[in-house]
Image (cartoon, rainbow, N blue to C red; front, side, top):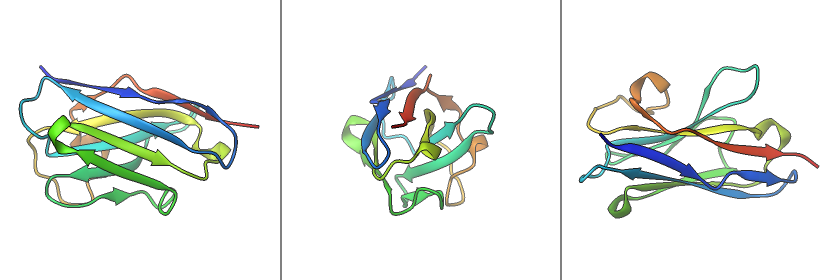
Length: 126
């Protein structure tokens, strides 16, 4: 059974940047879909971005033009570069994967994903 592991969270000042990574282990093939989701205290989990071997990437409106998602298919690793961070971006960020499924784009619904990481915390404050 494969799994995904997030890395790269931390604390940053408003306007700063962070890069998260998500490594998928235990899969001898590229995963069809990998996505980033986040959840802030007292709020529902929301999509951030997703990438697919079929197309994309896809972004939530709240992060377009600030965040960039990328995949290293050979390493089964996904990255999320976050720029111009604000306090509203503070949350636990989760990596998720849909190893073999087929999803109608933009693949930003969490119910499409069956493999979830433990999350990495991002805190933006001055």
